[in-house]
Image (cartoon, rainbow, N blue to C red):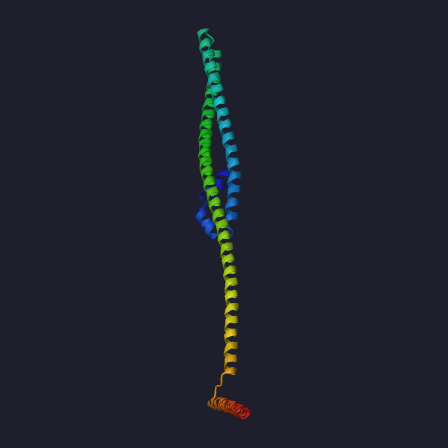
Length: 225
């Protein structure tokens, strides 16, 4: 593949499509940047060579044009001196130089067009390279931001999980304490009707015995008087 074909392939590349289809867009864009930088150096080299060749061809054209003019002058001089044979030889050399002038002029023009094409390609490639670099920077910034957001989300999840675990443990303790209190209350408080009457009767017996003790104490006190 020629240089211009490789560059044309890079210039036709749709960055958005490539990014969407790539498994690793950041790596893809970095590789594109490297490829474009490499092609850019080659295009710059070709531009310099094309310009140098153009100048060389124009110089050759000018030299042969000057030589043709010199042979024309010599032909005119030979005619003036009556040397037609010399004039014919000089004119033949002039015509040969004219053909060379025409050939070098055509080559110089072709070289100029090629140099112009390479210059335009160079500008387009520089623009595409700038665009790709910007896309790469944007993508890397988004990637870094996504990582930061991901870490923040994980941190919130960890903190939230810790808080939920602590609240869960606290709720469990409260429920256990409530259950223990309820159990103790059940133990201390009579539940059945029989137990409640039994408790009432026991209280009455206690009060009766207490009254008897007080009555005997009162009688003993009166006897002592």
